[in-house]
Image (cartoon, rainbow, N blue to C red; front, top):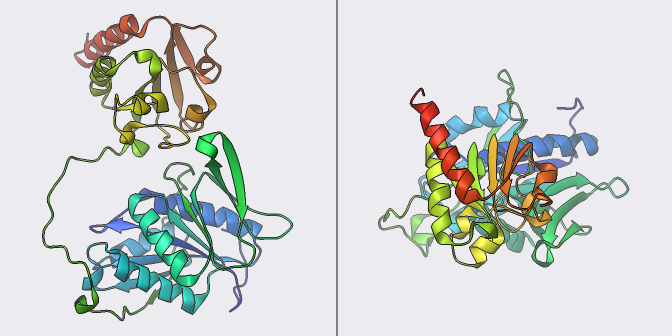
Length: 340
């Protein structure tokens, strides 16, 4: 973090620290890392976190370690479970009071719902699902880049007249910063001037659903493209993923064909991932897919076409039919697990 003397007029770069049941979402720390980088390009600015919930003060020291110099905390029983109204009112009141220059929110289900509400309440702009953040060198304002036209073009958007400059950023697009164990900061507690009687929505009970796939933070992904041929082929990929302790991913044509659900999609219009190992089976390597997984440590490509673009970015490649290659990989992985 850059050293500077903070003044009352220091530009504030805010990050919404998302949590559920007291567990912070990793995208919050990714955004704090990005905020620190932006602060070096915006002289005199200060990085701060915004946290809402009930009995969540234990998250605050983590925010300091990932770069927040100050955390604004609204802690109330009304905020135990996320609801748009109390969270929207609470954060909007903070924005009105402290006037941040930039406000970053994770492009999660919760973050997308909340960010639009805040932007509407405080009458500012919002750039959604960003993949890159920078400070425009001439105007010294946020330059937020996001895919547009179905992922075929990238647009950089500036919010010149309204504040704060708001952006939501997809998980895993930005690198995770290294925490500083000895870091400390300032905690400011703020009230929530709402009661349960003000709430139009109440949670009566929670009906557990199917466990949601969290592909963004998987260490191993076995992904398939149109070359897999159909849903049956993904059963085979699933077997390899299970053997490796990973999850199954897919390119957009697979999702459009209905072979897998959207939670499995990797790419510009899907999820961004940064696994240690990415096996791309039957994936040609279109740029819209590659931008979602090019932060991978090791890419193994399997394709019958030796000229497929995926081989240009792969660390290793196998030219062959995946229906021959994948069963052999499964056999070898299981053999290694059994000490053979």
